[in-house]
Length: 264
Image 1 (cartoon, rainbow, N blue to C red):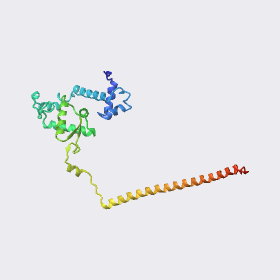
Image 2: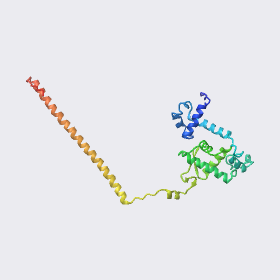
Image 3: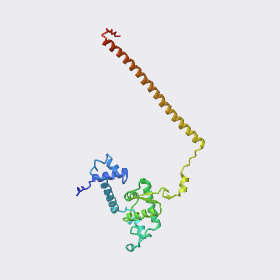
């Protein structure tokens, strides 16, 4: 059995909140590597941060209380309850997330879809965002009902079925043919993309410029190689002359001839 995890301290929780505010949910590795938080969260793993943030998020949803000037029942809860089927336990096989397909009216469903697309557009995670990250973003701007997670999961699956979202493992992201939450056809996307035209004359000019630049590089390399060859050849001539001089001295010394050394 592994070593039991110690209870989270208030300093660790504050560091986690500050890290989420700085990097966003899901960036656990960045948070732990940040010098501002690493000495506080050194004993916590990425999974520990993820689980703790999910628990903190769920706790905030359950403990959230309506403002004094707000209605006693959250708006989303009121709308969801108005269309909720009391016979949910006897829902047919095509029920989604414990609710029938008609459990949320069109107006409420549209609001959920807008919030989801807004969250994914703002998070901008190329690998997709998980449910916890989406809820964390939405709860900062909207008051959520206690059953918001179930309704959100239902709408996420519905958006995937409609082709507006795509699911990557356990994360969701907006499909490339969805712009600002509005579906755009492939033909329309091609029209929106900037068009560039290149004439044959321009292509020939660019090709000639590249060829000239390549030739200049090769010429400079050849000139440098020639200079190096001349330098090495001169060094060889100097070494040969020095060798001949030393050899002559050696021969005279071997014949015991007197040498006059003149110091200059």
